[in-house]
Image (cartoon, rainbow, N blue to C red; front, side, top):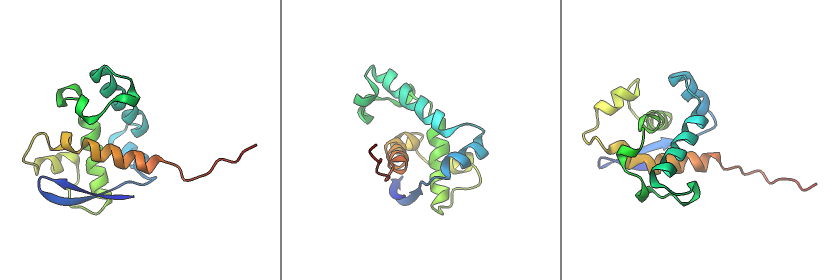
Length: 125
């Protein structure tokens, strides 16, 4: 799945596929599914709402650990063929606004969630 996003006024592509969790583990030594679940729970806790009721407007940058989004955003950009350097740090050094990754959280999360939706239809027993 590919999504075009605006990063500091430039259209860039992000790609998500089944390989993301494996790549994330290989690059960062952590389980992406656990990291994204923790990030979602942190957002809900910061907003003081149930997870199903949290919106992007409920969370402030200081309430989140942006590392998982920095890493995943870099990996998604890289998977789409964007020139983002050899590490998230190289990509982050090219950004002008310290809140750029925060602005991308909605796009990163949306792409992650859409990629995880199944198209299989369960068989009734």
